Length: 116
Length: 109
Image 1 (tube, chains in turn orange, red):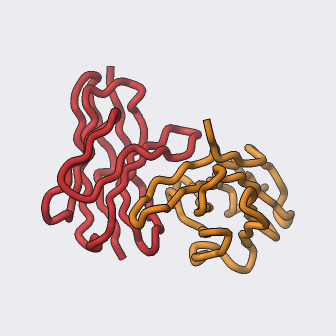
Image 2: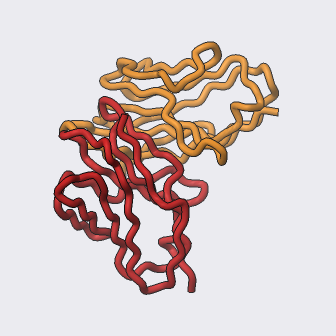
């Protein structure tokens, strides 16, 4: 049963520290998404990649967030420096996107980040 | 920019059929409509997707009228385990999905 995996599942850190979250998309999927979910804002798209190329990161605070796909099996989301307002659950999702309009995305379990 | 409007919350008794309607007045010609379900402490899960008329799978049915400005997710005979947040989505760009706040469905015994 293919699944998106994310590490770590939980992260508690102090303000100013660097945080790196990792995601392994489902093998064969060509699109990877990063989302952030908070009670106040709901689920927000931060960035997404197709065939490892970044297509849109307009939802991401550029000064402190960065997203990369070093290879097809790994996507990373980094926050440096972290701030308390970054506390949220971060989800990674992957999809096949083989057909235009195909919006089925498979979500990972999320990384719960707490910045003190 | 295609966005969606759906009720914030709904309550239903076990065993009833639940219909959640979503409006998407600015949907583009080629856009599909997608519904996701999210349980607490989990990532959203794809339920169903459609372009027009009716789509049915083992979990739900999706009804889309001819003008495609709205859609209705139908959950037959809900159980307590169907208590979740349901999101109606249409793309906001090239396969971008705007989740919004969804509809919180509470199934009552």
